[in-house]
Length: 381
Ligand code: MN
Image (cartoon, rainbow, N blue to C red; front, top):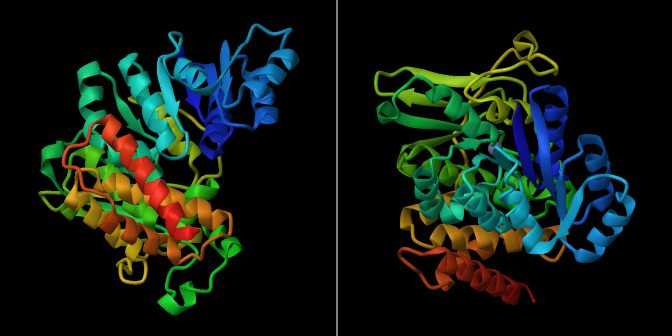
């Protein structure tokens, strides 16, 4: 029996993870943390009976304590509650599925408590990979990717020597605006951007997917997870989303992972690794797919992706500036305060403006996040 704590249980990854756990007799939930969706958290708590749950606000915790008083479930709140779930002594593994940089500190707490990490929160590695990866190594914990592309790479590497990687072939759906010109992009709306052709995801990652910035974050994530320099990571636009990524080895062999575009599959693999289990779901019909196509990404129109490569090559706190500016810009876009094309513009401005730090510790990373978000907000108002 493997016990799992979930950070971000009411989000897209969290709910899909619980649907995986519900199918598996050898997995159980020990604790759940979420933001403000207490109605769904209450349902989850009744169904999965964790020993501990946590919400963002104490006033919400009070409501849950009252509603769940007949059950042996401890209800916590705030930072303290989040950290308690992350370091839950009953958990073997922590699913880190919060959105954005708020995932960093609980993920670090989980690593220090010796938990294996199923990592869905890419912003953690993007901004603090240089701290997280050595920490995980020292603590002897595994970081298991939940992102579909990184799970595909991880599966492709199984049984192969990492030293023999020639290139990582990172696939992208291209998002809803694939093939558009700069002029066309200037007029897209929030509603257009929220329509991803292939994947069902949370709002933030759906917008990131439309700007291709999600792929930029994934380039950085792959760099940290697999210790490959970004100039050996090739992004391929693959509109069918069937090949979830691949590894090209020094002998010319390319090994990839294909399957339905269903996040439950990489979540399930992270939970069952090093084994592979059974999971329900529609099998992929390759006869219906017929063809797989690959295109170069348009890094001039979707230059947020180029900025991601630039940020990672610069290193230091620059990936953090890139990511923080994106988080602030996407939040403003979701509030309809800026246009779609202002997202990469604001990131570019922040990368010029924010002070560079060569080897940032956690405090500097978090200070860079604050400074960058404040800068982006000042540009908007
Ligand atoms: Mn992905």
